[in-house]
Length: 87
Image (cartoon, rainbow, N blue to C red; front, top):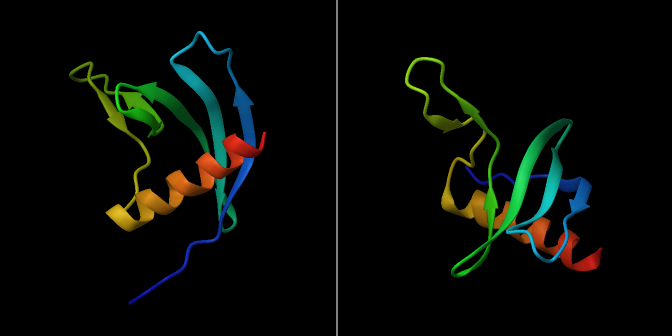
């Protein structure tokens, strides 16, 4: 079953050029908003850091939001990069 996501960047806050975190991003997916995505400069270029929360049991960080498949992750990254390059 093929579904097309309705993605939109609703907020993008840029950081200075000396920071590895380039922007904080909030994204609307249909009628829902996901807050706390990060656009990060890595060794191989920009990548999208997803919202995380720390587990009280083991102290590790776990994603609280994640794409279901590779295509969804790619589509999300393309939308965020396009908004970042426009601003």
